[in-house]
Length: 411
Image (cartoon, rainbow, N blue to C red; front, side, top):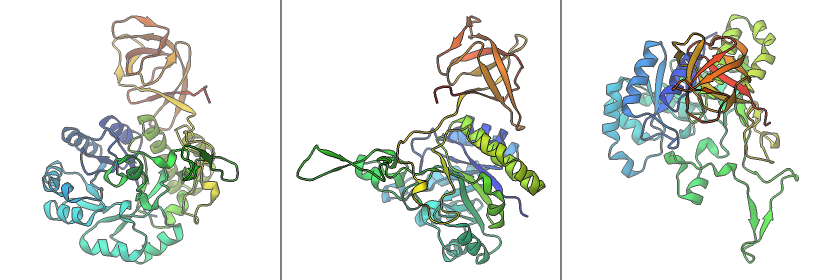
């Protein structure tokens, strides 16, 4: 069996390093232009350079998104942007627009081009079309079943790779081609500025009674009529590999380091376990489920992989994430003061509280917060201020790059 690539999102340089530490074979990132996540931190050219160098030094590939559906004005600076990317040497460019594809092929032919899911890639003729033009990989539309993917694999060249989203948020619109955001707010989802109106609550207004809102009911369960569950295929690694998928893609370039680490580490473990021993993978299924639920999510479904989704694939009663664990921070380094470590605090925690150390190896260790100090050496009983640099002593000392999280007691 061919080992699939684990492709993990990174919205900034810190998350890129986290993804690599926690098991990614490749990361996909966005620059400051031409990507579909305008609200993500995204990478400056200097950060892209550093990120690519860091990834390559760890044997990890970097794919850069340039997958907007371009208007005429977007073409003005496209050549210069691709020339800049050429100088940085990423491993692949992710592109949806044929015009952008042609420019990228002309300017940086040595960089692989992957065709974005935004291009609606739903059949083997489409895959073959892009292959003849020089694409190395095609990202399958989310609307495909495993049987359809198998059929595509059987009807395309062996050297054309298939990439599929296997975890993360699902879009209510076909392959992400949505006009709701543009209609409501003027921010175009196909230009990277989606405001996610699929997560809003809706009512009906009768045209002769403006201002009178009539509730929308779906089996009296709620009014979040466009709100889909998240995709999770952690229990179906064997079927994904059997379908001939070359790259397992995680959605989430706007996610935190905790989310990326949790998902990357869990899928890394599941993939490696299955390839080593299918029985070991089956034995560990409960552990995978438990770990994957420690990141934020909107319940889980298997999307289109086993047939078209039904009403059970929607979340009708709310638009909030389930968040069972809270991100405390990532250990940067040891303190000169014996027993302490230094990190930037992300969320509140208290002296005496139980914290879980999440290690890249897969091990989780529960410890107690014994002491908290700020940069001035003043002791604190709590850490309520986000982004405060802290010196903390635990009952067992974590290592650099370990992630710290605590149970969310508000659930």
